Structures are given as C-alpha cells and as structure tokens.
Length: 63
Image (cartoon, rainbow, N blue to C red; front, side, top):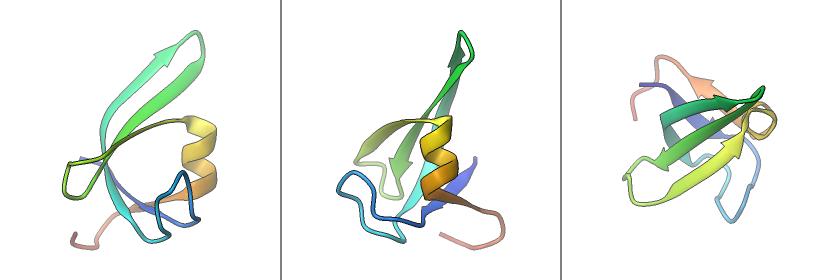
C-alpha cells in the first residue's frame, strides 16, 4: 500500500500528517486519489496535481 506524508498544510490537515492511498482512478485523463489518514477515520479525495504539490511518498519509514 502506498504511503504519503503531507508536506504543506492542506484542507485543514497539519503538515506531517501521514496517509495511505486506498484508491486510484483515472477518467478521461484526470487522475484522482483517495487517501485515508493513518487511523483510517478521515478520507481525502485529491487530484494528481494536488498529490504532487502537497505530498511526499514514504518508502522505508514505519507508520
């Protein structure tokens, strides 16, 4: 499962918040991602541009 960390404050989430990508979809060239917080309680739906601008992929770090 892909993991990301928020690098900028974004939509009421604090910098450093960790997320899991639970779904990826593409419709007519527009990619959307569904992210869930580490505790799986809150959901965030964002575009590929927002993902690249505000999130950093986590590879080896343990959540």
